[in-house]
Structures are given as structure tokens and as C-alpha cells.
Image 1: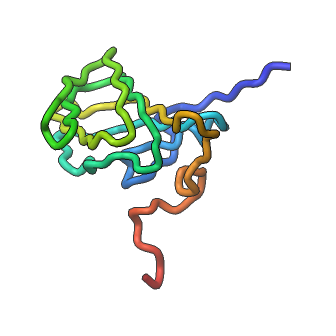
Image 2: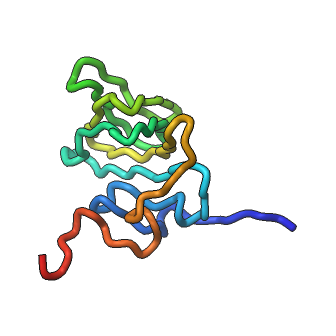
Length: 135
């Protein structure tokens, strides 16, 4: 019996104010992290971050253009459709985009460890950037 799931990017639930879409949860993937990154044009709010958990990440650009800035500007990579980049866990990164915005597939996992999804990446979970009632 076939085992598959179909989802449409434009119908995925978001988190981090919609910058990430819950592709992994929508498809029922359990082996690795999978999100769609959708950065609107001229966005300057994509957070600079690394992954202290040890998770490495692959970005595959599908639409738009931007610049991946690594190690606080020490390196940068031009992002455009067809470009793939692997980013190590300790490497600080941010993305800046221009007139087109940018869409990419983000795949993540921690080498040598079983994948454990973060609770806020599950369908229906509250966006961690949204203020909870009473706080």
C-alpha cells in the first residue's frame, strides 16, 4: 500500500511571524527538520542565529534572490534559484533580501542524533514569537 502525503506550500501553517512554514509537520516527516522559508521583499527582520543544539542546515533556494551573511559578515553567499548551501551548527547566519523576496527549502538535522521536532513546529502550536495571554 502506498505511503505518501501531499501539501501545498501556500496552505502551510507558519511560525516565527510567518518567516517559516511547517512543511515537516504538514507532510508527517519524522526523520529530519523541514521548513519553507518565505522572506518578504526588503525584509530586515530575519534573525541572525546559529544552532546551539548542533543542528546543521541546508537551504535550497526556489524563488527570489538574497544574500546569506555568515559569521557576522566575514563571508556571504548570493542566493538565487538553484543555489544550495549547507551551514554548520555553530555558524551564525542571517539573510537579507531585495525587491523580489526569497523562498527556500530548509532541511535540518543533528549529525549522529535521532531527530526530535521542537513543539512549536507542530501543527496548531502557538508561534513562539506571539505573546501568550496573561504574559
